[in-house]
Length: 217
Image 1 (cartoon, rainbow, N blue to C red):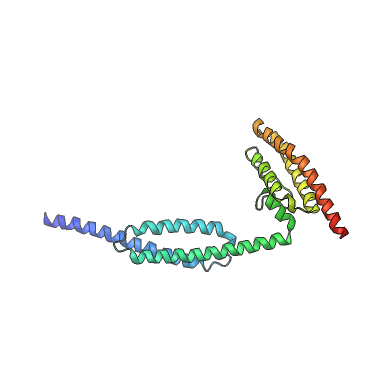
Image 2: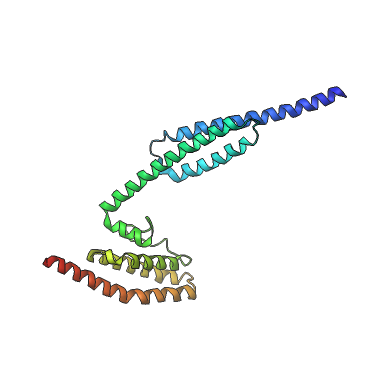
């Protein structure tokens, strides 16, 4: 009887030791994993995947802490690795922002497209195939709001580019209407178009006038 109890107790102890050992390994592997991220040659290229992997590994490490008797040292390791990742994230995001600004400076038309439709949504090919019956109203709303927010900063060339993009979006709308665009969304888009057309005409004339005045100075 005593032998049986002893064996059961030994089994519990063994199981507990195994969990603790595995937890320690998980934390150590987490530390190694985060250290390895700092050695990735071009992290910004795959940053979304890296960040997602980090979040998963962090959850595993934090769950492992619950299986440790004395988890203070392990917690310190996890916290230190989190701080390392935060530093890496700040550096990568700064690099991406600098790269974006350089691209925008080199291609002002792309900056304009990004402002009106979202980062990278529309390129030189003016392809609006990503616009469908479910998101087209939101696209028009975003376009119109961004236009109103930035119209005072547009040059005559900017207005020419806006006109081309607006016409390309309208052309896509003709296709989307045949694909099941709801009457309510279509009605709201019509309201936006009704407001935009005269506003654009006046603003474009104003931009041309301003440039003519500057040319005379």
